[in-house]
Length: 225
Ligand code: SAH
Ligand code: DHB
Ligand code: MG
Image 1 (spheres, helix red, strand yellow):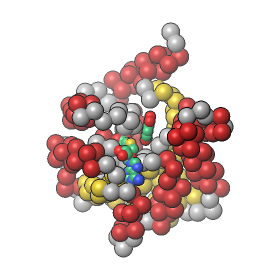
Image 2 (cartoon, helix red, strand yellow; image 1 turned 60 degrees about the vertical axis):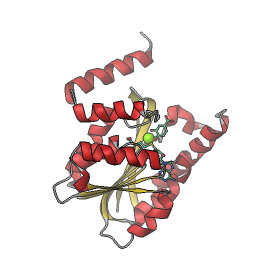
Image 3 (tube, protein in one colour; image 1 turned 90 degrees about the vertical axis):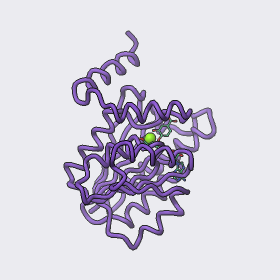
Image 4 (cartoon, protein in one colour; image 1 turned 90 degrees about the horizontal axis):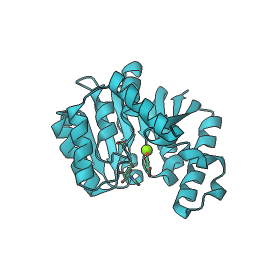
């Protein structure tokens, strides 16, 4: 059995064990596929991990950068109390529209607001709001460092910042050797982001590599000092 196949099977085993059937999230994935939107959402296991992070931190205000069609948003929002809020930012109108349908489908529209447009245009408008307790960064990789700056501006000591795709199948080791130009630029941006996160005097941080259904990638997790 190839390692890749094995990692996929273990993900399936853990998903069966810890998650099981989830009709709403299955419908979200089916709708996204029917709309020909790339299946680049977090895995089910990563989604439940995000849900647990919201529960463990007791977060009431969550910010997500990169909605896609709302798969990770729903995991995050499920853990919110009735008076909790998820603000999620999405560039593509088609993605944002389907995400809104999914928030309605999951009966979580009252807790989720999706702002459509480039996240860097929307983030300044959030500055007057109360601080976010948890931020999930998962949009365009070239702007990860800019999103980190905003995350720090919009949080408080004790807030948690999580970022997806900080390993990129190992491409972060040596971005210059990545053949595809867009992939190379993304790998370098994420490498810069990781370096900032690791050395930032306002953060305690770690990155964990992950293997599984989504090949080989990782989450970074930081706490604001
Ligand atoms: N968090 C989602 C996956 C996000 S995929 C999940 O796990 O379910 C990344 C998303 O970021 C895509 O939908 C893409 O359109 C969006 N994106 C790319 N550039 C962006 C930008 N500048 N501002 C906001 N969203 C952006
Ligand atoms: C891809 C995966 C992601 O998790 C993401 O946020 C963006 C793109 C990808 O596999 O292309
Ligand atoms: Mg991602």
